Image 1 (cartoon, helix red, strand yellow):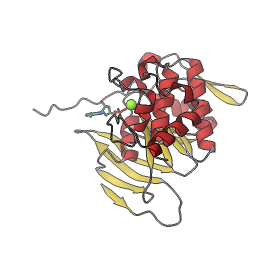
Image 2 (image 1 turned 60 degrees about the vertical axis):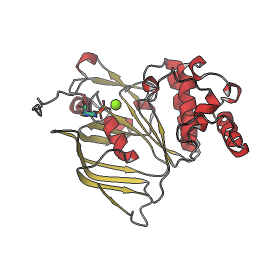
Image 3 (image 1 turned 120 degrees about the vertical axis):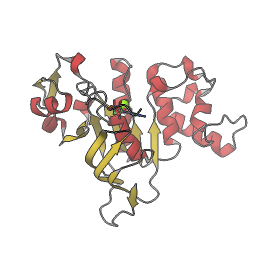
Image 4 (image 1 turned 180 degrees about the vertical axis):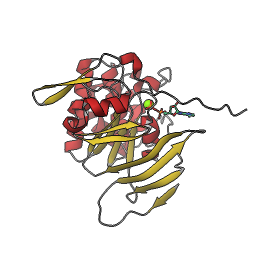
Length: 269
Ligand code: ADP
Ligand code: MG
């Protein structure tokens, strides 16, 4: 990967140009351009298999880029919030231990320092989890678990918060709470990039969307990009779009079709 020092004056946290990635034969990302500014709140929208998680890995620096350029602000601090469903809940850990692991490389520390205790308490308080510090994480609701992972990501004082499908598998109330929390964090100065395939529940509420299907199909406000034409090119299915109170509402009759049609891969044997 070619990672260059940023130009001193564009102020971006991350700048991708012509980024191409593959796991094996076919590109999973193909000539992707993306700018992430310091106060941006961006949703990456696309069907299953369209490259959303891979693009997050490029932002995090954990995915090798085959071609193109990734430019990162010097000493950029990124907080990563994993998908709640992918976490192993059998691991015995309390809320405060889980948050503190951000400082201890994933180890449970029996006797945290005064600073660690203070910072953990402060971030839990900030996210409305003050009363939950000693609860086992399994005892929390999906939305509260999501908050714990946001709290853990905030321990590193990130300039950019990256979240993969933050509200998949949670109910509408939780989704609403998570969106409000993220909006508050963004207003307080943290840039946010999240992925979602939830067009009406999440995407239409965000200020900026990037429609992805291997490459960037369109980018702009929900009003700009949630159109029948862009959605058809992104999801491979026709969807009608209505407007309600100035917000687009996507009428989706083909949920079962929302998978990228994969080219046949040659087996490597
Ligand atoms: P999304 O998050 O939009 O569902 P992904 O970025 O996870 O998409 O995956 C994009 C494509 O890359 C899919 O075709 C997927 O099967 C493939 N892929 C993802 N991870 C790997 C991997 N570790 N090895 C091989 N192929 C992968
Ligand atoms: Mg994914």
